[in-house]
Length: 298
Length: 298
Image (tube, rainbow over all chains, first blue to last red; front, side):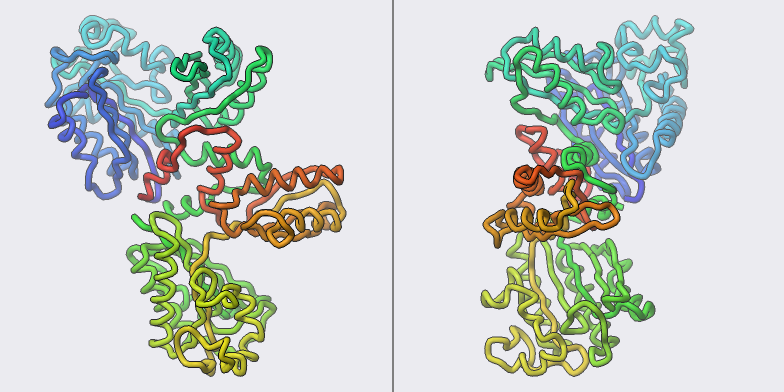
């Protein structure tokens, strides 16, 4: 694959394995598309698919899978712990290799327009694709969920970007957009005090005056008797992993607390870790093109 | 590519671009094989090819390229700065992904046997494929070069592993074997003293009582007025990059010298750097399967 885009569509079906199989099917055995992972959560009643591909075949596969989900899922009978507003809840496109954020935005708009036309589904563009600042945040769009959307979508400020200003009777609405890869990164602390963990989290995160592309909160790890700063790195190319790590170390000093380890949850682009190695080794003149696997993928 | 083997054959032709093109041709546009790099050096009069592939198609491509080189290169008229004993000087196979060292050894022997039969070329197995300890080291096999090999090969201890005990009249002899990936890694010091750089190199390298899979020497960087410990990491899976880095830092302390940076020369497997990031971040429960690109290659 020369140019790699990632897509992580979330579908509101986490229990019926036959339906899940049908939704995932368009991503299998398709030239230029690779299904990396899919996992369904019964409590959330939700399916998260991770797929990469060249932009055009990926677009076609995503459109097909959305069609299957619209046909199979009825939100009127859907219950689960995770908030949701549609059969296809959210479809983020993420530039991975030799594609720009601009291309991801363009692709998300193309898919959004097509989804509205083919399936008569109201589409909200979100994140980098948002048509207004109040639509950047997925949680703000989704507020009220499927049930509330019947009314909400009629308000002028929540008019969809594509499709009818009316909730689809069974499939609800969908958010489609482009964003950077998320890295879920937790840093474990030598203290059982949730207060300290949360205090540190507040200092390193963006809204607390901390790092621009960093969301964080304190979490208790009861079985281990410790706590962690649980972090979402929203753009590791601007806010590096090691910067969050070192900043937590610095802030922890105030409490006489130290870092006992850290962990990455789920998938991570190699660049996020190689950049970290490069920092600690003080690498000069290093290029990602020196990485054997980067050459193989090209 | 499911299973990835690397091969870095060295050919004794660094000047005639038409011949170089013909030698490299078997690696191009071949299903299951990817040519990552090739570079010719006019002074060395040598061509180094880096290619990866699934074992079987890689084997076929290597055999074909060796045939072309045997046909085109005459060592009787070859001159260059780099020591050489054959038209195809050395052919290392390197396990990269989902293949074991045992499979690399088996592949090297299969290729060796076939090369002897097809091209009537004497073959020495070296490194992990060597049939005796005195044949592990390429330099020991090659000593005497093409010119000396006419006599040397008749000695019982230098009888080839495959093929006739007689130097090929134009193509000489070839060493074929399996080895781990080499990482060329240099650590720059804050001192202009070559003596200090060499002293540190001697302490960290295997033969000086240092790290098992580490070769090192001191080198002067005259334009920058500094020196470096120039390192060959011969098995980064056993002797990690960060271990060499930290050990140089520790040894440098004795001289009041510090590390000003480091550099990786040429290609490096992503695992070497991700392992380094994992060490500095204290990653818990991390698996290489969490790396997005590792999933894509699978």
